[in-house]
Length: 187
Image 1: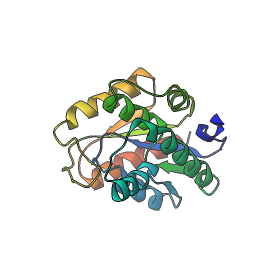
Image 2: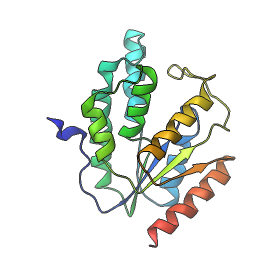
Image 3: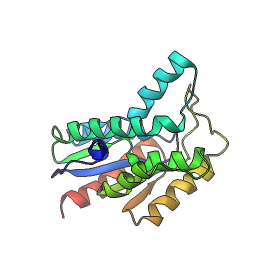
């Protein structure tokens, strides 16, 4: 049953965009995929939660997190088979774990936590909060961006993840990400 949260083995380099909401992760995911002529894994939670909002006028609740995690891994595992040398992931289960803890008083489902820590990626691109906030139906912490950024950074440090911080405009972020990814690709 828990297999649906597990990352399937793959030979591709896996890069995750990681960080608070409205920090340019999706835009950068698309740019990197285009640059490397590969596919990118969208954030499953966006569609899932937008549907929930549209149909029920409800936001994320703790019981939504495991279905979100399962959907995210299903998409990632399918797209890893279609990737070239690299797979760009707009998010991962560790990000879902961070949101679970931030929104639900430090709580995280043990199954989600297990796979958030077991699934592995080669590089995390931590997006800084220097991009203007863009409101939508799902984003709700415009005044807590710095605290959320620090939480994301602390999580990567706590679990010893390989990461860099991306700051600046879209062009600067893209170039810094490419430089670090190219280094990994040519090891």
